[in-house]
Amino acid sequence: MEIGIIGGTRLALYLGDVLSSRANIVRFGVREDFEAKGIEWKILKMSPGKVITYKKVIEESVFILICCENEYLASVTEELKEADLEGKIIIDCTNASYTENMPCNTEMLKTAMEEGYLFKAFNNLGLDYPVSDPMGLVKETYFCGPDIPEKKIVSRLISAIGFKGVDAGSLGNAKLLEAVYHLRKEISLQKNENLDYHFKLIGV
Image (cartoon, rainbow, N blue to C red; front, top):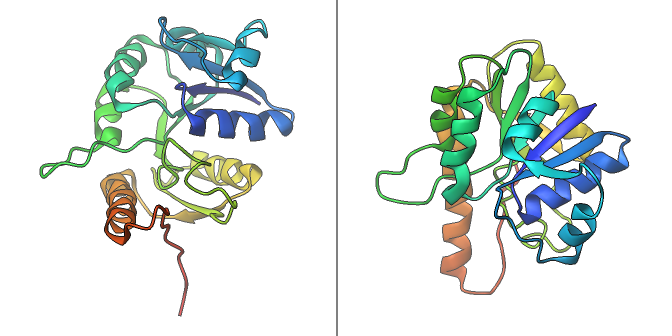
């Protein structure tokens, strides 16, 4: 499977590494002024065609995971507006900044897409993952999107990466998934223990 991962973040590296190990073709889309500072990024940039622009990764990938920082999301949105997204599956893995009138990144991306299939997943991990989970204890992610056959493909991708996918319903629930992320971050701040806290779903 040809998979594109947009963003120069820790989460992008983690997902790309796991997916590459599963015999997928993975390309990373980064901004044009991106500087490879970490050793992993430097190695990737030395591999021809592995680290390319947002535009090229959108054009060349059937599956696209968006893992970029919020400051670059507008640029990604513009590229999505111009691209032919027919048949492509896009997964938003980001969270809007926490404010009183908090927007939802997924809604912003949805307005840019006339074609393609948009889902949300992995946002509960945060862009710094796996730094926020050094022992690898987090094994589930919530995902949402339209109830169409492509949702099963997203679920299988989540499983292939090593997570249990918890179906959270329609794409309109993306703002709830972002709220879960911000709640866990607020709990981590209040605890003041230099630890990250995560939620786990249980049935009773």
